[in-house]
Length: 331
Image: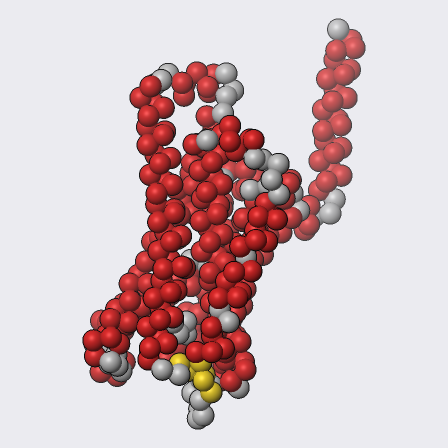
């Protein structure tokens, strides 16, 4: 897969669109990471997946920024290194989304098992699978060759490499995570529906007694929103890529963009932009899915941008406690 094909298909457009996506995406990801690390959210074990996901998306966006500056036009080493970074970040992001879905599924569908294995170090679990894409993407150094001229300094050695690379990428980076996400969402939906059918008054009772309904609802929202965004924004890109592979197999060489219809070029570029946007809207997904994240983000950034906020807040709380203490003492 050539992750920068959109650049070659319509250069005037990508010069404006890609920088906007990258700048907004990196800004949002920085907000997300700072919010997590400067609040109690960092102590939630499941949020390690959000940290990995957001970090991988940030690396991917930074790679796209280098593409905007045509770093891959400088030398072969820069070109193949950039492809390696982009592809590795894409893999890590996809599987971090799937891992988060598994975590939320266990918390909702099997809460007892989730509590039983809650002591397991998530960092250690991630350390087992994160190195895998780094090893797999070493294939980039084998499949790419140096290119002379004014174009990108690396290209596929043979057409068969394109077919193999795209097939493997589609299966490992899209189909498997997507199937994991869809199947687990269906199982959760069935369990929630079954629970509501068995005890329709459970939700009302839990709210009156301060139960776990609100928390489960928040978790369910996260479980649906993040995978939905992943599937919707990634599917057009991989469909287009598989069409390219099909053309490669049937016609041995896909048509040049100069000979393709304007409609296809628009669809092609839009699919790439949606793929990039998927890595740039993490903060919007987190904020939409969790009211706790929104509140925590406001508090965390107030502490950073307004150093006196913490002291004022402590003073206000102390004043309230002092007032109630005086009232009770007089009574």
